[in-house]
Amino acid sequence: MTDRRDDTIFALSSGAPPAAIGIIRISGPAAAAALAAMAGGLPRPRQAALRWLVDPADGARLDHALALWFPGPGTATGEDLAELHVHGGRAVIDRVLGALSGMAGLRAARAGEFTRRAFANGAIDLAEAEGLADLLAAETEAQRRNALALMGGVLSQKVDAWQHRILEASARIEAILDFGDEDDVEGDDARPRAIADEVAVEIAELLAAPPAERLRDGVRVVLAGPPNAGKSTLFNALAGRDAAIVTDIPGTTRDVLEAPVALDGWPLLLIDTAGLRDGDDPVERIGIARASRAVEEADILLWLGRPEDAPDLPATLRVAARCDVAVPGADTDIAVSAVTGQGMGDLRRAIAERAARLLPRESEIALNLRQRDALVDALDGLRLGKGQEALLFAEGLRIARAALDRVTGRAGIEDMLDGLFGRFCIGK
Image (cartoon, rainbow, N blue to C red; front, side, top):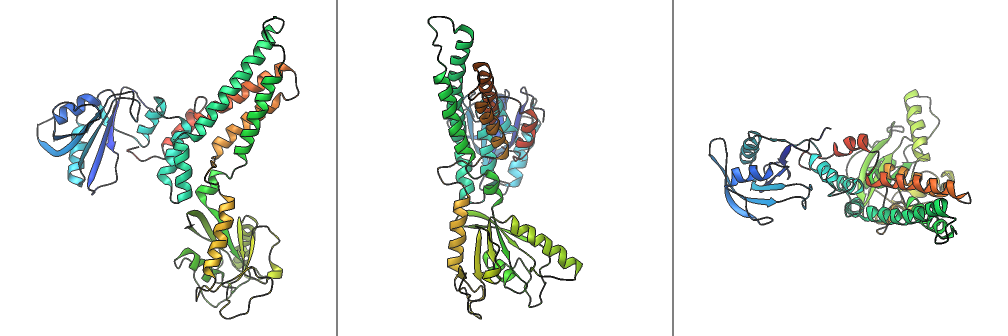
């Protein structure tokens, strides 16, 4: 994505019409002239003014709307910004956007371009931009909470604090290397090494938290067992819809079925599998092989077969799925009936408790793969010179600083930016 700073961009930044209100945002050097031409002059900065909007091309009235003016750089995009809060009908919005497109120096914004300008102008850093992208895609409370923390700068503040401390360590060790023989330079490198060790411990603790991918994709809850054990019936009950076909014929489910759900605010990915047995049908054997892989990759395994046959995994819950028609075995963890609802509340609570242990707590930050890779590099840099001579230690500190710069987007991220901001809608 090529972003020309001399362009002034505009887009509908609220939901698709029809709606009560449509918010049209204009950002760039010609924003003031565009607003003045349509609203009959600029309103006072950061104060909404009720104005008749007109098409500068022919003077035709477009709407009676609110006009707002935000002079840069203290704006959402870090540059001059105007907003038109118009009535949210399709005809009104299309007419106002059409008038803007006919003005010299203005063009329609591309996906994510407003946020990219905010990043380029220093209004937000890369970690905060990723938080905004996650917030726009959030579907559960846990996802919303983590995205809001990132967008609010929690990770960025940690990284900035680490940078300052590592910079102090670098300054001290460089002084020792360059001027260690001077009387006024402290020759002991204990302090910078202690700083590096402290920061390394803090980064390692953050890396130990559950990753953002699990928060985004959901905890994998796999239902497994022999044919006709009630897997698909329970799968439908947990999903809240008829996602799987249920019959009395063994081997009805031949492939892995997935259903994303939220349970007590936690994101889950329910996975129904083919019944595990020895079969001659080649198609069924493929389904059984996929079911076996799903069992191995499960975060939580609901085993619906005989308790003694359950895989010996920490995530296994041995479930008697037909307690309304059969007496549960002695080693059963939970007895349920998806038909009568008996025990379903206990099962949901057990799943939610396990999911909560696998997902970030409210005080933790979930890092995405890019952020984790950068922090791993920073940690490797801090450990590079541990116990080694000062020159190697100083090089490790430099590597750590460069890696931390990648977290907040201060270095080496141009290709990644295109992919990130392309995830945004046009008005963001």
